Image 1 (cartoon, rainbow, N blue to C red):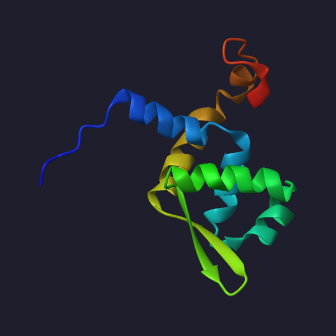
Image 2: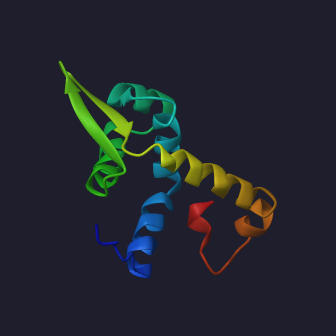
Length: 111
């Protein structure tokens, strides 16, 4: 089986998907198990349209998937390795959080 070459551009796009605080909050909830839109709205406090836009992004990038059960769409994470990625990120950021929050080169909108 031929190995796939992953370009820096593809990796950067993956991190861009994860680089939004709202999408990270959604993923954090989905890593606890599958959830409906209503459950995610209750957990995140987002409006239905804003949540749907973020879920559409996550689905398009194949980070989450949706399954219809009756009248509900059930969302879940497509790859459990994502938990490890987020855990490692938390460890990396833990001792730098204050410094990262003051970074003027990235922009204050992500804080």
